[in-house]
Length: 174
Image (cartoon, rainbow, N blue to C red; front, side):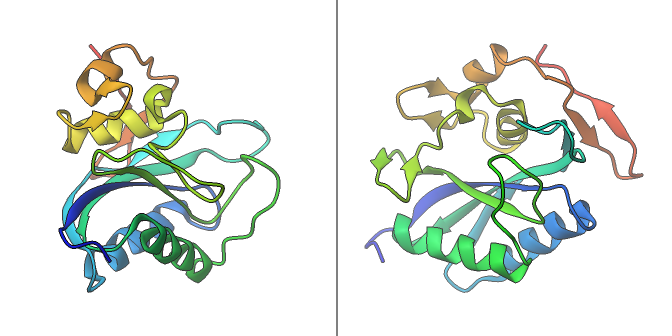
């Protein structure tokens, strides 16, 4: 535990076994966790798979939490949530029932074998930046800059926002 609450940002993704349900359930469970206070969450987005293309599209979202958990303790909690969704680790960037990434932890930079924050590559991934900009456009990615500025340089790469009626609409950074 840390002494003061920190705002952390979590990336959520799923492309197996009803991905929308996995992401929604994870958002709800994290919001109810006694050591996390919701600090906002994006809508849902559809994105082409990163890496191997022989897999379904992903459903993605971003959620902010205020917590006194240390980064390592928060990572353990996120991995436990993945396990609750029967996450199996296979090939790199392969399909998964749930992927939870600790994107940002306050303004800290962390480089450990098990955890790197800010999350590597987040500053150039549309499926992270567009949902993050929806809820925290002024957030800063340490060493990279403000989310709003990073988004301006990030192509949408086929990203679509899922509407209330379930249809998906292309997004643009313009």
